Length: 140
Image (tube, rainbow, N blue to C red; front, side, top):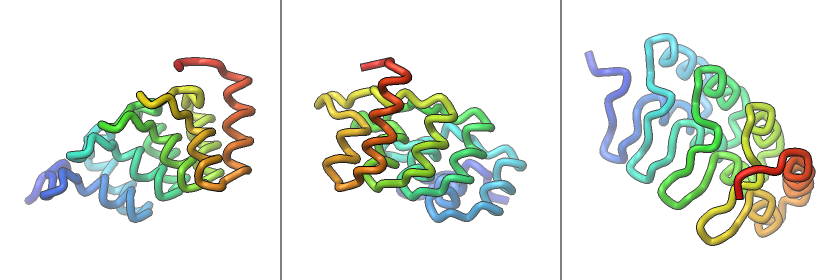
């Protein structure tokens, strides 16, 4: 039997693929079987990055409960909340904030999650993130 943490040619584990596709039941099964919530793809993205970018809020919450790193950066310096902001995933942004995400973290280019939301025409996400930045100043 193939390992629950085996990687495909993109460095994706079954958990990464299931989280990316929003397959909640499969994610739950993989987590029960010991799937690694800290596994990264070849691009340095974690399972949480993929779930956040695709707006799979319930999966994001499950991963956070299992200890996924909320402020982990991928190779481009993006955190999961930044990816949720790029795509305007408001409920996912709120779940990440509730899970302890630091909204004021900046990429090496100096971009925050709120700026990503603004740059991608997601004013509600930007407002949510700016409010959170004021409430929780943190890593710049």
